[in-house]
Image 1 (cartoon, helix red, strand yellow):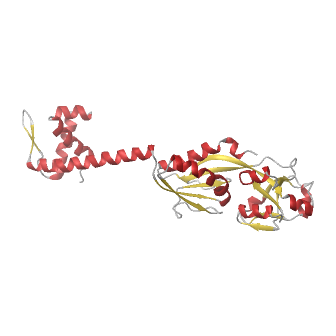
Image 2 (cartoon, helix red, strand yellow):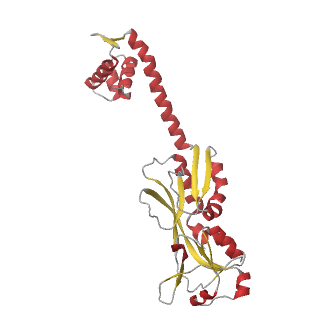
Image 3 (tube, helix red, strand yellow):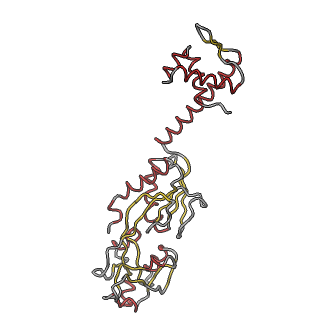
Length: 300
């Protein structure tokens, strides 16, 4: 049987206070509980650590030797606890973050300077994946995912929700005309996603009143690629506000079919595994993102 922390603590406290009674009061234990802890320790070590007389307790030679080791162990545990407490107050260590390229570029990257100023001891490692990644396989601490979550083993913290809109560049509209009705989209080049197919569900109603699912003329796995194609005048696209805000503000992309567009918003969540203790560095990063974005970050 291995020696326990409580047995070491009982032994050292008895030595420091000079009696079982004083040690028990200090530890918040009964005298019999403290005595049993000492007895178990001596039995495990198969040696006598303290000579008990009617007046006092005296260390044996073996006890004096073991006391040095016991103090070192307890001091080591105290130091470890202090360091963990310090890390909670001042997070440190490597933090691996995963997000789709558009969210990484348009949302997270602009926030990194402020985060680094607040938490300089956190080492950031950024990864961009357009699909759903395995957090354990990719050694990812926290991932930002857009859309409905399917993995029930993940713990999710909502970050916000971003509206999706149908957009095109002024150059494309000048060459091909501006669609006035949903049905006219079939006459245009449509830019969509390779997967999942649900990303090709646009916030419009088809002739049957169902959500419009487009068949892309040109498709890509990357929303950022689709954005650049739309800016280049290659077609009409449907993207989230978080990645097109500046484009719309500067007039590089123009919303289409505004009155027919439904208010559809994609949820954004920070996810990590439930069976993993949430390190302070993960908490502080997600807190920073939520705080920096606020509710207005996903508004038009």
